[in-house]
Amino acid sequence: MPTPNSGLCWVLPRKPLTDWESLGRCTQCSGKEGSIHMTIPYIEGRVSADQGDGIFTAARSMAAQLAILNVHTDNIANFGVPGYQRKSPVVHPFSDYIGPDQVEPLASQTVGRLRNSGQPLDFALAKPGYFQRLNPESGQINLSRDGRFKVNPDGTLLSLDGRYQILSTAGTPLRLPYVPENLNKQVQVGNDGAITFYEPKTGNSQAVGTLSVVSPTGAVVTDVEIRQGFVEDSNVYLQEEFVGIMPVRRQFEANRQLFILQNDTLSRMIQELGRAQ
Amino acid sequence: MLQHIMTIAADNGNKQFMVLEQIAANVANLNTAGYKARRFEQYLFQDNRLEGIQRVDTTTGAPMRTGRELDIAIKGEGFIPVTQPDGKVAYTRDGSLTKNSDGYLMTQRGDLVGNGIQLPLNYKKLRIHPDGTVDVLIKDQQAPQVVGKIQLVRFANAEGLESIGNNKLVPTGNSGQPEPLTDVLLEQGAIERSNVNIHSQIDQILRLNASLISNFRIIKFTDDIFRQAVNLKQ
Image 1 (cartoon, rainbow over the protein chains, first blue to last red):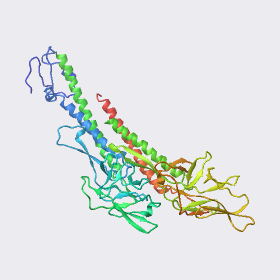
Image 2 (image 1 turned 135 degrees about the vertical axis):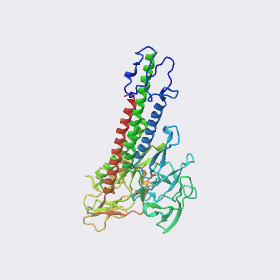
Image 3 (image 1 turned 45 degrees about the vertical axis):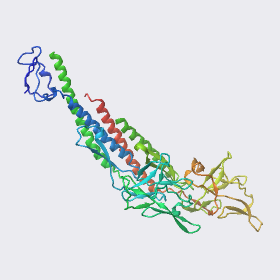
Image 4 (image 1 turned 90 degrees about the horizontal axis):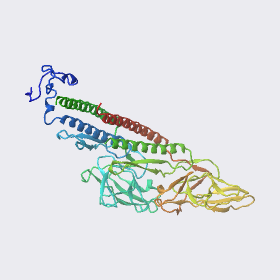
């Protein structure tokens, strides 16, 4: 029980929080000016210096739920993208700041379902690892599991959007000697990613290079398995995403209720304090 | 954040409808001679945005025997150049030919084959050789008479060709310029069927449907949260 302040009369009616109206006047001092009655313990902490802190906690938590929802939305949107790796939202519990920055998307490393596409330039990674793609304009290299490639008229292997060249283990872009008439027969990729180019006129095969496969940190992966004519579907399972979304909704609602509750409390308090003046 | 989620979901919805467009075109052209299946490939653009491009499956379709002497199927690579009524050249693989009243070899869409190959009116038998040479046997003559040649062409990157409708393609900077094809193998009396794989279309439709449903669910869901967030006072 707090000690009575000067000008305020403290009583302990122990009413529920929703029943604030009846607390406006003191029954003992019969509504004398300058008296106010408050319940204990409901508002005890809130009349202190850090009052309103709960409101912000609720608001930040709602923001965190949205960040989680965002990760799930990304997964659903990229369900049809071969090579896409599902991201799971990881909430850091040790931080006292709950906000969007606290939610970190973590890529799942499981290999998606391999689907036969029949395209000779579709190379699927059947084991973890990434292809290295070079942006010839900026010189930057990024990683992707998307193994659907195409060739430009001079034979250079390109990513699907045509913006990246594909690197070999030698660190140079892979390039076929020329665009073959029959890609199916003339371009062969071994399990280890070695590309050979078959010359039907002479009957000779020539090595083009080996696809570079690296780990997320950039280290060379030795355990490589590449399948030609396959694409790796994304490892997103839609039902999992919706299972993940359900708690988001409930927690958002719960935090919203908490927010409303505390906001009402605060507003009543301000009203009552104002009336007491 | 909420707007961002909405944008992603709306964007994805649009992309799925583009996939549907390709599937619809493929299924509609299941029996179109020489039709090449299209597909809409989705990929991740920078900052995780969903993008997609249309690709064409350039593999050869199975030949179907018709026994008609004006039907030709191209085995392997190559395109038949056609001159459109406006004089511009386009390329097609539709080998179901016909002839007009003047005896010119035409496609079913009314374009001249090559620069125009005129057949004599009173021929008895027409042969199209595997290399594209067209000869006719005229009544009361012993030796066949060569009337022209269907010179097939190839492109360095056939996938870069742009479709202008009616089963015709035109070259772009990405496809390279047409080069005459030397090792041609034409089969007379057959047409090339479309290379659409109907089973894979069904598979794609199922995936697309699942993606679309989830997508609209997410929009509905986000809308609920949006409303709750806006009406935070109630």
